[in-house]
Length: 314
Image 1 (cartoon, rainbow, N blue to C red):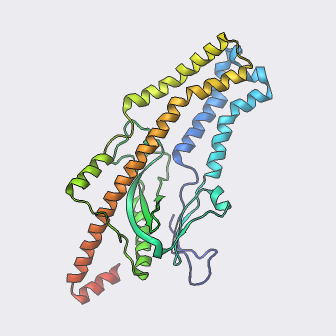
Image 2: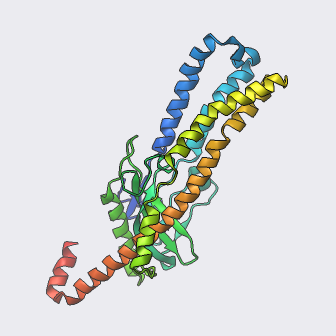
């Protein structure tokens, strides 16, 4: 949401652009709903005919807590990870962070003097990192603003979709934010892209190829998820033969071992996604610089009355 606001700001320093991200990541919300269905519907139905696996009956309140713990953990993650708003103000940009960090006073503000590059880029949604169809073709890429500072840090403001579906966010809102940033950078004697990458055609083609590679091979994704129940069964069977007790320890051990392939896949996917985002950022900076220089040339060769009329239109 973009709006004019002066809430909590002194006179002359009113916020000119405010974007409020979704309170909960859409894919995290879908995961909460899925775990809730499994907990309150799937688990009771399954345990009706399997009394030997009824941990609620065996452990009482501890069993109930164990069954509810995944759902409670996800709800807590959603609550504490709720992002703050993104503000473009005269004094600087206030970047969105999880609410828990904002409560601790760790809410970064980027001054325009410290901005090296600001550009429209593409970012992956959380689920796209593990999707077998994940590629740079575009359908799972969301739009965002990349902000690089003089200290070498890169901040990405993600403009997420407003519905629980994988779709591209409205680029208009992102461009409004970038235009608000551009106006303030100009006031501070800077451009959107001040330090463009020096890429020739071969380097640009290499980055494009890197950005188009799938994050994870489809067979590896399928195998990692099929390994979860298989490993859980093998651990429960082996610990049963070894007469390991208590049973709660067997279940915890089985869950830990079974989730290892998925955890390793997440780790690999996030690392590959970091390299992909870096490649996409370099491409975005190159294109932003080219558009910036083209616009400067157009203004330079345009007669003054016409240039003034165009400036008034914008």
